Length: 585
Ligand SMILES: Nc1ncnc2c1ncn2[C@@H]1O[C@H](COP(=O)(O)OP(=O)(O)OP(=O)(O)O)[C@@H](O)[C@H]1O
Image 1 (tube, rainbow, N blue to C red):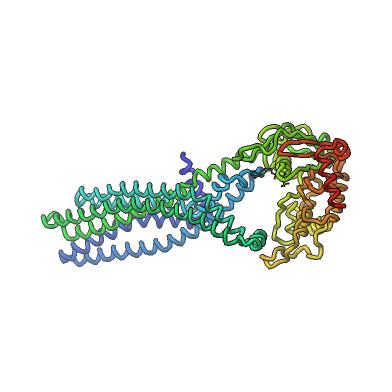
Image 2 (image 1 turned 90 degrees about the horizontal axis):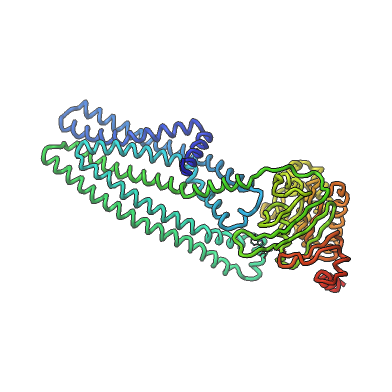
């Protein structure tokens, strides 16, 4: 079965799950609608011929048939449209939820940071409506094709030459396919400029970047650039639509010429006494219907094609998520040896150089390890590898001797806790913002309050306070946000690996010291479990408290050891430490 057919089946099942009775009724209405078109044509022919023959009963029967056919057609169209909207709405919700679930089920973050991957799953979201309507577009195509067969049969009964009208469906179909392909290519190519446009516009309206942009006065320039990206995507799409319309226009012109030929043929048949006036009415009616049937087929094929455009992206995402969602060995409950990084190099997907090179480190159980280095040295990348958000390109990381790649990602994550440099500002209730750090305890007010207090987060706010001015709530200061993030990390009671990636950058030096003391004493208290703390920091007064210090430069480890050893070695660490010491004096 092709990917397209499998997706069609998947969407059909989903539609029936969304509303079995509604789906059955919609099938009946769609199929029934096909017979109506022939009935309308036949009733018109009978009406004209029976009138000419003075057959009153025939005229009444023809009128009754025509009225019934029109009524069924109008009612079926109205109810059908509403049912389609209802089912498509529900399926779309379920579809978006599935994509969201797939995206967030992937243990690594490659797909969230790598542009070609982002574009693929964004395309699925953008086409969710076409995907949800896929079964109905396909059924409509099928039923209209059946209706076409009936129409063609009736036309052939008048003259076989009239079948040529239906044959002109082929150039129409080909022109439409060409137009679809042009549009799909334009949309695929436009995904990136549209994503750039969206991010630039967000930067102008989101409060955090907007402040800086307002002060720098760069808003107009960014808006212009965003508009440029928008124009680029829109121009591509317009050009594709115009080219597609030219192909379709040519095919329809051909059809119009053939239609005129059909009418001439019927006029000749009437003149020769081989057809009645009623037959002429039937032909005109059928040829007109044929036109609308062809259009319906083409439109529903186009709708199926739009869904078809994301078929490959959809299955890619499912396969990608399935491949990434590996199970593995249980994570250890305690550490006895620690974590080892051996010969690890790492290159971001699509990158042209390794940002970590041949890194070898030992993070002994129960120790606090500080990672220092200039901006861009690779500190946060190392943290991402330790937390399993990326896997090393080469080399390996082991936890008590077991390769991290063999450990179940969820189980390892359950043993982690930490704060990242770009910590999240979750604009929820204080209780939720903090509690989500350990979702099982999100309603446990005592646990959340304890974490808030230990992190020194603002207690006066109250746990049920809404955060975020944009949501009508309180807007914490940057330092307060950071403390809330720290509180979130404290929700996970006994982590085996605690990562603190510049967790105190927004705090004043006193608060940083106090917090770090607190964290370290907590970790030291957990030495029995062998928990490891990895601290990324730029303030060397904090760094010196670590048991082991690793200096990264250009992705390589250039020095490592205890503070006293590194000072005695007189290398880069010692120089930087003395520099900072003088600056703080
Ligand atoms: N998602 C990404 N995709 C591609 N390259 C990235 C990505 N994130 C970081 N990099 C690159 O990796 C290198 C190391 O970045 P990293 O964030 O690890 O540095 P860092 O030492 O933590 O810096 P800082 O002190 O500024 O936080 C940099 O050259 C950066 O440009």
